[in-house]
Length: 59
Picture 1 (tube, rainbow, N blue to C red):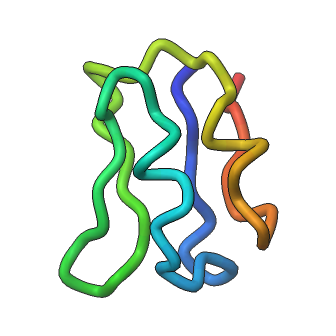
Picture 2 (cartoon, one colour; picture 1 turned 180 degrees about the horizontal axis):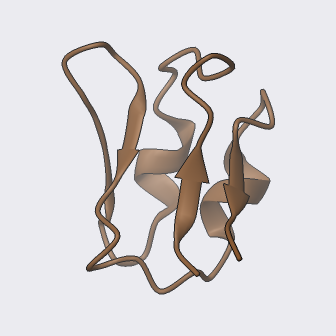
């Protein structure tokens, strides 16, 4: 269950990018966090790092 980003809430601060141990998150062209689901290990580090609560682990 990889992390999912709610782009309506994401402000593009990049806090999640630096916390991901797998480097599975980057900011896309719209300046929103984007998760590479093939690399994400669903550790939850990004969930805790997001000040806006825009990331959650999916089912």
